[in-house]
Amino acid sequence: MTGDARALPVGYEFVRMLGSGGFGEVVLARQSSVNRLVAIKRIHGYALADAGALERFHREAKVLAALNHPGVVRVFDFRREGADATLIMEYVAGQSLSEQLAQGGLPISAALTTLGDVAEALKAAAAHGVAHRDVKPDNVFVLPNCRAKLGDFGLARIVSDPSVFRTADGVATGTPAYFPPESGLAGTEPDEHSDAYSFAVMAYEVLTGELPFSGLGMLDMIAAHISRPPPPPTAVAPGFPLAASEALLAGLTKDPRSRLLPAELVARLAAVPPAQWPARPEPSGSARSRPTVRSSPPVKAQPIRPPPPRRAGSRRLAAAVAAAATLAAAAAGVAFLVATPSAEPAGPLRVQSISHTVVPSSGRARCPSAQFEFAATLKTNGQSGSLRIRWTRPDGRQTDPVTLRVTRGQRTITALLRFDVTGAEPLTGAAVFHVLTPRPQEQTSREIRYEC
Image 1 (tube, rainbow, N blue to C red):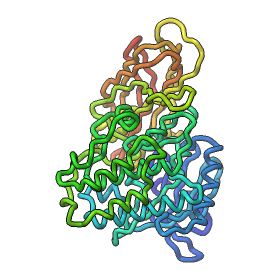
Image 2 (cartoon, rainbow, N blue to C red):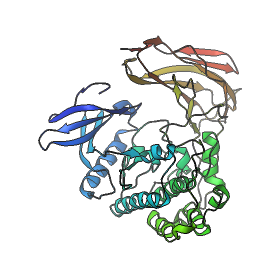
Image 3 (cartoon, helix red, strand yellow):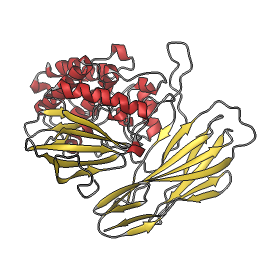
Image 4 (cartoon, rainbow, N blue to C red):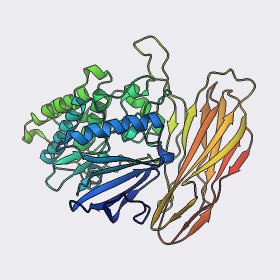
C-alpha cells in the first residue's frame, strides 16, 4: 500500500495514505457497507517477530475488538493475508500526543484529562488481561476536545523493529525512553505494572516538558531506567507541586509491585489544586518518542547487566542500540542486536563472515517517500574484544565510526541502518558495511532504487 490502494480488503475503498515505515503501512479507507472511515494497518511478514507472537496478538485483538472502551482505539477486524497481518481499526481524527508535545504541550487541565483517558484505557485492558507493552506519546491520539484514545495495543510484541527491544528469551519491551526496568530481565512478561512505568514516564514528560532521562544514548538510557533514580520533577520544572512530584516518582519506582498504577497516579495528580501548578513549560528540544531514537554523536555500544535479581537464576539484558538515517536531516545511525550463545570461543576476536539483507526485499520503492532497512549480520568466533564499524549509505555519505564492545560468547551481531528517502529526486545505490578493526573488512548490500 505504499502510495496506492494496493491489496485493500474487499469492501474497503482507498482514501489516502496515513503513513508508512519499516513495519508496514497505514491507509485511511472507507468501509462501503456502512460508510465508515477506518484505518487499515498492514504489518509486513518480514517485520513480524515470530508466528507464535502473531497468534498471541491475534487473541489480544479479539479481546480488544470486544472491549469497546471509549479510550481505546477499537480493532474491528484482524486478518492474515499470506505472511502479512492486517488490522482494520477505528480512525481517530486528531493529533498524536507526541505532536502536541512538540508544539508546546497541553495546559495542565487538558493534560490531566488526556492522561486520565489513557489511564482508564489501560485499566480496562488490564481487566481483560491485555498489556499494551509500548505506552508512549506516539500511541496516544488526542481529539480536539483533549479527550484521548490509546492505540497499537500489543504491537510491540510482534513487530521486529529497532524501536522494540527484546530480552534474551524474546520478550518484547518497548521504546528506550519509556523502558520499564523489569523488562530487561529474561523471563519477565510485560503486564499492567510495566505499562504503569511507561505511563509514568509519559506523564512526567507531559507535565514537566522533559523526559526523566534524556540526552543519553540508547544503552545508557536503558541502564538509567534500570538503576538510576529519576530526577524529581521539582528539580526539573521550577514551581512544580511537591505532591505531584511525589506522585510521579511513586509511578517510577523500580519495584513493579510498589508502583502506582495509572489510574492511581492520575487521581493523585488531579488532587493537586489548579493554582499550585506552574505555567506550561516551553518544549526543551529533548528527544520525543519516536519509532527509533536518533544518536548523534554515535553511542558507544556496550552490553548492560541489570542489578542482581531478587530470585535465583542468571538474567541478562541483550544489548541493543538503534538509530535512524534520514536524507533530509543528513542524520545516520546504526542498531546492534547481539546474540549470546554459550559455546566456548577461542583465540582473539575475529569477524568470520558478513551477510546482508535489505527491506523491502525487492530493493525498490516509489516516491513521495520510502524507508529502506539494511542489516549486516556478523559472525564472530565468540571471543571478547572491540569492533569499530561504520556504514556508507546509499547516497554515498558515511556514518560516524562506532565502537562496539563484544563480550565473550557473543557470536552473532546484527547492525542495522535505516534510511529514509523523501522527495521527487530518484536515488540508486547500495549500502556498504565496514569493519574497521580488528581487521578491515567490508560488505556491500544489494542495490536499492527509489524513483517516481
